Amino acid sequence: MVNRQEIRIGKRGVVVIPAELRKRYKLEEGDLLLVEAREDGILLRKAVTLPVEVYSPERKAEFLLSTALDPEDYQKAREEVRKMGLNPDAIPHIRPED
Image (cartoon, rainbow, N blue to C red; front, top):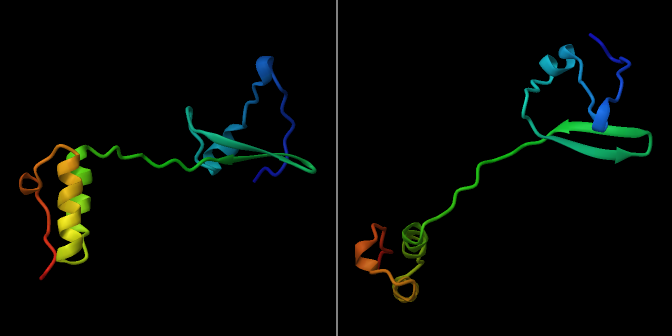
């Protein structure tokens, strides 16, 4: 196991991470790294990325309707869905119990 190696900074600041370290830390071409300035140097860490879901108006309406707490809250959610230009009866959802 290699703990320390000398590497050279190339043009435009390019640094090549040795293959053994890329394998050990599962780094692949295109991965994002976080660069953090430290008192004693620079720390590189693999960034954790999560996909972002973009919700359609219908999906937002489903959330509003399905998360209503009681009949009064449900009626408010229906009003909000109508303000979105959608028919609440056309949105599949779970109604709160009366």
